[in-house]
Length: 225
Image (cartoon, rainbow, N blue to C red; front, side, top):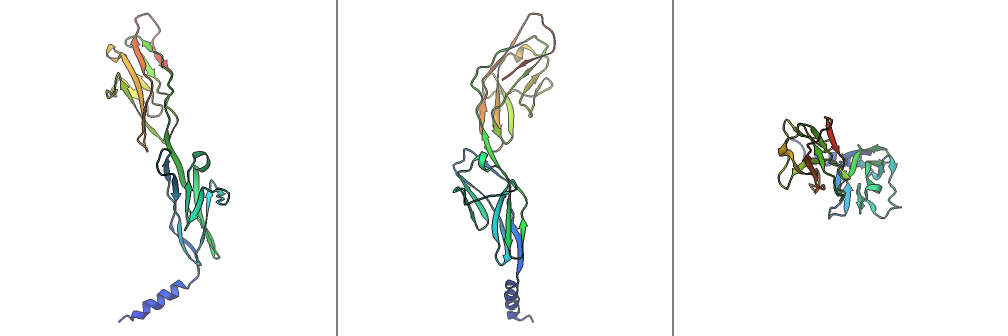
């Protein structure tokens, strides 16, 4: 039978063995919404070692100096940033933990800021196109981070443009492509963008689309935002 004190002896022996740091937790990517009520962000790091390891943090390969920035603190390996700022704090973070037997560097974790600006309030010019021609309506989205989803409102919310064989919305640029314009396409078009993290949405000023009857060359007509 196993003696009950055997485990105790083994436990005491293990705790007294010196060894270099080993990660228990490495930092994960963080996306911080700029309009968040929480005015701080943290990246977590935890390692075991004997003696207990100390922690430092790198941002974009350079050590973070918590002494020179009152907003920063490191508590038990976790770096806490109060009143985070995209210009000062966005980037790639790594945790460096050290004891007398060595140092280890964590994987990179990205701190990214999520926001969605407003469209320019400038009125958009009407687009005139002959029936049967194609047209491209430019979304010209506002500043944003990270990705946004594009859709278009036709005439009034919540009537959305349905993509089909004639209508296509680019999720790269937000532009709306309409081939072979028909009289039923005439109306007002509004680009709607949605932030994939915060779910915030903003609407562009309307772009009127009209039919013209005078002769003109075929092809696509463009309107810039």
